Image (cartoon, rainbow, N blue to C red; front, side, top):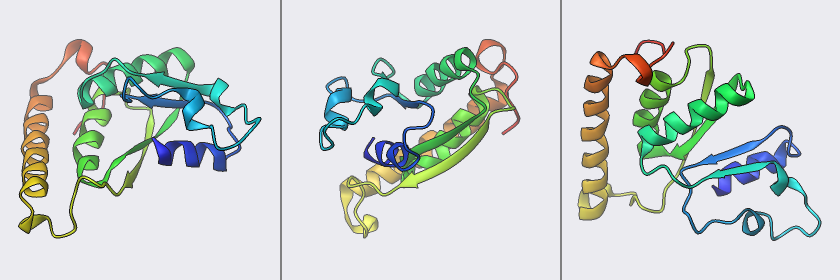
Length: 150
């Protein structure tokens, strides 16, 4: 979220900032509280209902189609980027440009192999990545309208 807000500010709030899958407790005003008089919050859309990456992509597709968006910057943790990219490329229309923007995560220790929580996180992410690669081999219909290949 912080990186998305930072990039949005860098481009002087051009367009809209869609924050998909944010914590239900996040409030627009809190994202911009450090700068008095900044009106960027008016062009921020928070989606708080999705519970996983697939739902993030499905909700994003709805927003993209409704608002005629041609490209997105996909911002997520570095360890999650590969799976998120696979899901978004398969769910979004094939003519939407996706620009991955990985960020470092506090949840992942640098020496992950010696930290149980980090090891489990990476193993889980790899497992889910493989699962979705397999899933999209057979997915069709509403899940992948006009989506490109893996």
